[in-house]
Image (tube, one colour):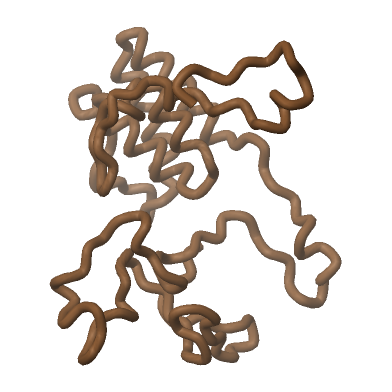
Length: 202
């Protein structure tokens, strides 16, 4: 489920913004830009002048995914302790599909990807199924990103496919800095253990 458009409570009351749209109805947009800065006397004269990049979002930027049900107010004690999946069957299918793809069995990989995709379409009729011919690296990365949107694994997938520092997307330019494939060791950890050394490049 995605929250898009006017943001309301479950009872239907309008929720106002608290930052760029303070005391105004908060409307989630499927766009990223500084729309609050467009208009007469503001920074931008028109929307056409806006740039879209990660750092230019505001409080209404982007639809909000809700992938794990949120308990209702009647079960308020559960609202911040809801069960969250650690691993999903779709992830097992995609891991096996990736193994088959890397081993050269692209048809077998496509079958597994399609087994997951078909549930998203009426009557299971997929308008763009994966095939041995179209399931290349980019399609595979797209499938991972679509199925696991907002589940916190995108960086890991890009590193595994060796494109995190070598490819361009949206406002990200390839850096070629392979040390970024590793996280820095937290300062607190290094301070607590003299045997630890920072990862090179940080």
